[in-house]
Figure 1 (tube, rainbow, N blue to C red):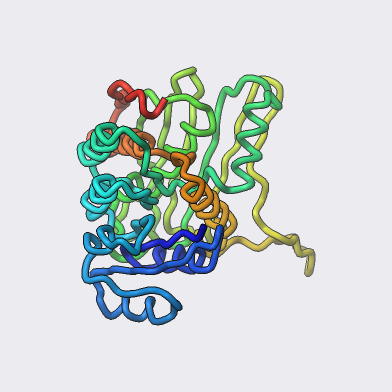
Figure 2 (cartoon, one colour):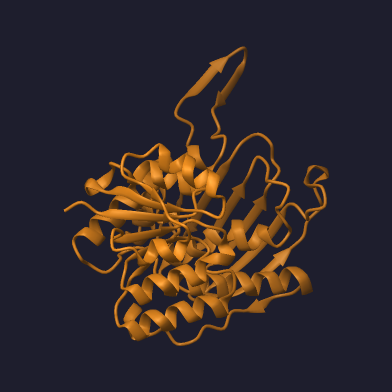
Length: 335
């Protein structure tokens, strides 16, 4: 069975997903696109053999020609599109954030619970990265004993002009928020954001940030968020346990020795570093939808919890100090 997919939002990440979905895993194809920029939507559709431009995301979701939906539009628009998919009974893959506020995320969770079936998957793609999966397997398998400390770094070469201080948490650190919950199978119970000496390269941003997370079982995590390192895009994670340490391998494909130096290549951006994880993520989503199974990836509840933790971190960033994370009871649908 081929899966006919509609894509709402065909900017950079939307086009990345379109490229993977059209003629991609499980015979999926993109049959409809919609975007606030009609010219861009027409350009993308014109490169696909079966795609039509729809006047709006709502009309795309309602179309009988569309079996499942991918939402990659601006974050503030995610809630109405995802709610429309739930109302239509159509599986939806929504890029992070699920919605920009925890209240909006909770409305999505409540709608899905009321529908009585899981339809939503959130695009936290670290879970599909082979290196991160190997890290989780090593930690879960007891390779280093009980985890005690975790050291993470999320470094961007640069960020676009519209990037704000809050986005260091809500757009960047939110990846690690989901990653930590998935890696340890534990909730984050408290967070604190510290502001070190400000980089002269960060403009008006407070860059870098140091984010401290407390996991429910006592593991402590420090995360460096640096978004103007210039040398490339780098993701680091090291787990220190009772009997050893385990860390993500250097993603450089080669090591070069010459002129008295040893050097490796650093990915230029997220597209290069996580190309394979996006492949795996969408392939597994398509396979699940075609098989008629509930999504196996990050759920609407995961998207909601990530936003709750992100909001707590933002309170710490603005007001200082340690902020406890208060989570509501998890609905039975997600257990």
